[in-house]
Image (cartoon, rainbow, N blue to C red; front, side, top):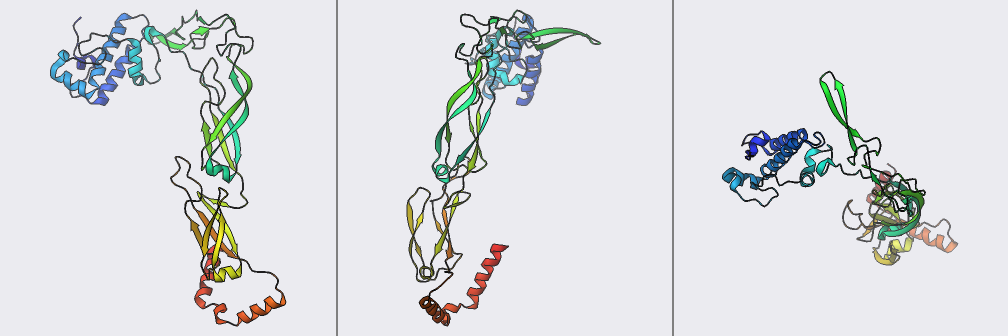
Length: 381
C-alpha cells in the first residue's frame, strides 16, 4: 500500500499551525483508538499511520526536512519518513500519551495498564523549639499505619498461589457493552465488574490481609524538618504515609508545625527580638554588654552614652534562616532597649537623685520630651 502524504493523513493544510496539527491528530487517534476498535486491524493501521504523520509534522526540524525532500529524507526517529509503520502500540502510548488525556491508557494489543492504587495520607503535629527551628531537625516517630502485608509481600495472594487473568475481561480491565438507542447500537466501555479494572483476580486470598496486600501495623518513620519553618506551616514527607493496596504507591505524611514559645526571644519573621533591660548608669555612661544568641553563644554590643529607652540595635545574621522556597538569607537579632527604674531608694540614693534633679542636664529639653511622647503614642496606637 502506497504511503499517503502526512498532511493528507491528518487532514490539514501545509500551512497548519502546531496546535491545528495536534488537534487533528488527537481526533483521528481517538477515532481509531484500539479500545474503541478491539480486534480491528484496519483501525490499528490507521492509528499507527496517524502517529507516524504526527511524529514528523509536530517536530519543526523533521517537518522542514519533509516539506523539502518528502519521504526520501532519512530520519532517526522511530518509523522514519519512509519507515512504513514501524511504530509499536507501546511506543505510541509512551511518546504521545499526553495527546489522549484520560482516554484509555492502553498498551499494545488493547491491554490496559494495571491501575495503580495509592495509600492515603497521614497527618501529624510536631512541636518545635526555636533552637530546633534554627538548625532544622530529624526526629523519629512510631506511626500506626497501613503497612505491606509481610505474609504475601503485598501481592494479596496466599503463599504458593498467584493472581490469575480475569475470565470476563481477559486481562484488559474493561468490558464493552452494546446499548440500543434511537441512533442505533452504541458501544460503551466500562470498568470490568469482576476484577474492578485490574485485569487479574485472586482466587486464593492471603489470610492475613484478605487480598488487599496491606495490614494495620507500626512503623518507625524518620521525619526531616528543614531549618526556618514557622508555626502553622505544613511539611510534606512523601512516601511515608499508608502503604498502597496491591503493592501500590505509598501515601505521604503531612506534618503540621507548632512553634513553642521561647523564654528569651520573640520571633518576628526571620528576625529574633531580644528585650535588653539596662540600668540607668549604663544607659547614661555607655558600656559593652553581652547579648545571647539562638545557638547558645553570646555576642558583645556597644551601648553608646546617653542611650534612650526604646532605641533598637540590630545584630546582623544572628536570626533564623529562611525556609527553602520562602525567602533567602538569615534574619537578625533586634535588640530592643528598655531602662530599669528602681521602685525604692535608700537615703543616700535619694539624696543623689534629688541633687541631679536640679541639674539642667537631667531635665531634658522640649525636643527630647516630644520625641519620647511620640514614641509612646505610636506604640499605643
